[in-house]
Image (cartoon, rainbow, N blue to C red):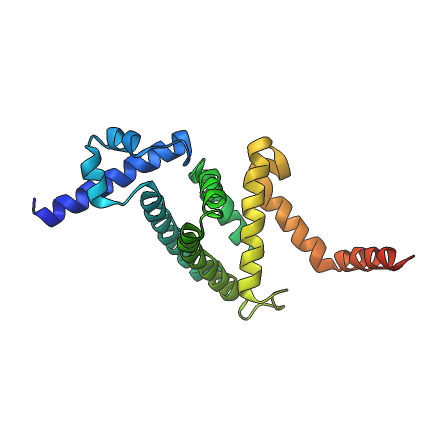
Length: 213
């Protein structure tokens, strides 16, 4: 095995170990020592690949974003122009269920990074790829469909990702919240309700109530 191949192999083993430790212990509680032990390496080998655990987590996040982008590209090819947004919701829920604990781990990292401007900047750069990918998928699904998107693709992507993050936290407290594994069906019902115009009537009623002295 060449030196380059060995370096790549060590990096992959460290990242696999980091993922296991992060998911088991959480980002804050995990340490480089624990990750090195899990990988079967010295700390020196770990630090030869990464500056610290933030670098390891961001590398894992980059890999996850790349994986999800490939899944979304496949989905876009299947549903482009159909207007079938339930497939998008269902796909997102399936991806979450296939990686238990990952969403909570990302949320923990986001909260910690929010208090560190430089780390938050690095996280935001990776997250922007996710937003761009979802926005592109939304645009593909809507192209040629019966009606336009309710918002431009990028703000709508940000809204959906915000709902996804909030849902993950809600289901930590109560796994059955919002239908549990059937949440995509509930969101599809909400989509139908919004499309029916009922939501507009509720909003107008609320606006009138606020305007009353």
